[in-house]
Length: 234
Image (cartoon, rainbow, N blue to C red; front, side):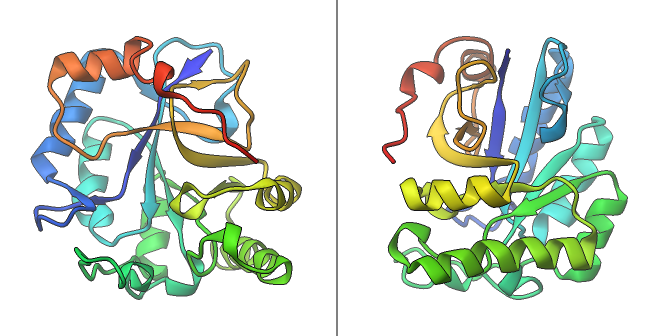
């Protein structure tokens, strides 16, 4: 079964490289609805339904609450936001060294509870958004454990899903993530084939640009994304 796992960051008209314009986002969801796609959560991937998708947002930007949530509800879709737990209610400080850095506000606890109360889900994107492949074993465990416990304690998070910061994963990171989380997401490109892909190396489809309907069809219904899959080197 092939499930397109769609990847977004910010939904905003601020011209940030992280942002997809609001009307572009709605156009994509309108297309998905028209073509009969239904959203599922990560604990529902064993459903034998055709045209299922999973919508994800990395980092937990506040604008997804104001700009994406109303559109998601309009088309009866649900989504998962991956949160950087040390920066809840703060800003994306991990991007400061980038040349095109845009300071963007992250959801606070009240925002996250509102996101959840509207039928959306959350998962972990680590505690500090570090490149997990470059830190010590003890720091790695803290990144994973702290994030999981904070989400469980503050928000009763039941999804138990992890998203690798920067998509970076090696054998050590993979091993510890597998011990702590049920599933994990990469930035590797492909539709998620539940029969062949490792559930702790789930590929996704980047949707952060304005695509034509033809391009949307190719990305979601054909091998267009699948042939770009590269097996993670652990």
